[in-house]
Length: 508
Image 1 (cartoon, rainbow, N blue to C red):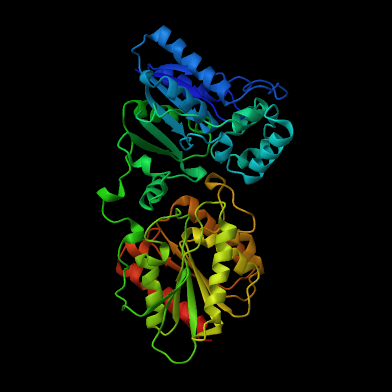
Image 2 (cartoon, rainbow, N blue to C red):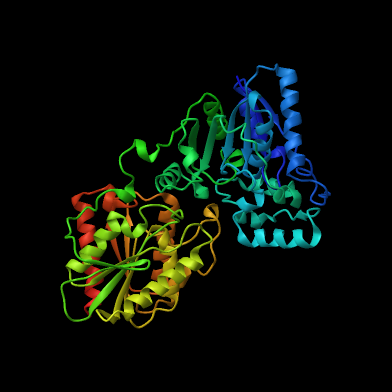
């Protein structure tokens, strides 16, 4: 059996692993929980002089102790949760020859040269820490969360009330130096096997990671290496508290080399965003101006326009860009075939903090379209897809008179802490209360990921409370991006219904 070294995350100490560690030990594994300097003690503990290097040394000392007790040939599995992956990686880089596997529990792999602060999901916390570092240096500490504040750091789904009370009572300030000192890696640990444990209630799934690989995100490309495996757990960010037995089982399976492997784009059929559109639509003329494409109908008088807004985030430099994806082109050609101007565009939603500039790109594209003499500027519809759904909030909150309809297909309509916090401006669930009489269409897929599906239901509930004008087109057997993944009669009928609904509002 392997020897496991378990390293906790921000504000927490070895105590969070107690239940999972006991289950690993009962299965015959060796278990060692790292006591990181300054964490796991009282809330008023001193934090001065403690940095990432301090914690790397803590883990190195434990590795050396385990080797001395269990023998130099004993395989060691390093497990890091949340911030804990940074000292794990730093230690593995210096003892690579003694490490059998690294396991990242609901956290991404740290990057050489990047501080742990870069992985903190809340931008306000990043700003606070950076500001304090400028004034105080790295000797202070970030206050431990109050009981109701843990959600800022990850989903607390599944944690028993007593366990959440204990988590809060035993939480310690996080030394600023642990967040500010960059992780330095030589590359020695790069060849080690890695397993990621994704907690789905915190917004991460294997499907989502595969999608990022398919999009060509350079940060995610290494995750398609055969040495990398994945597991999912249906719980929040602290599985050692919510599902300790299941987490222990996953850790044992990871040590045995099990887990789901991602597929490199070149070794599989085309990813969803590059597969053919499910309808046969004609190759109508396209005009390209900057980041905007217009698909023009055969008409002499100004025509209404439908602006299709892609989802994301999409990595900068991904090719082809979204406006050349078959589904978006298919929708735009379909609209043009029916007598409207179909519009696609590329916007700069490359990360979760990019929504403001993506919103500016969409607004600029709409104005460019309305200024075109072939477009009836008083009859415009906006149609959002997937993660682009959050961009609908601005238009719901203050719908202009010329916006005749707003549609959204398998949309994200509220942000999730596990994805990285988004500016509160981009929250369609609350914005719909100001939509007035604006007609709204939601295309809802039955096989949506739960984390996205719940945002749609929250939106529909909010819309019902304010009597918003909302129509729903259901695709019971459809998946996210069903127009290319599920070319069934049910899917085709849903696209027809949605398009005719939008065009019907433009004809009024």
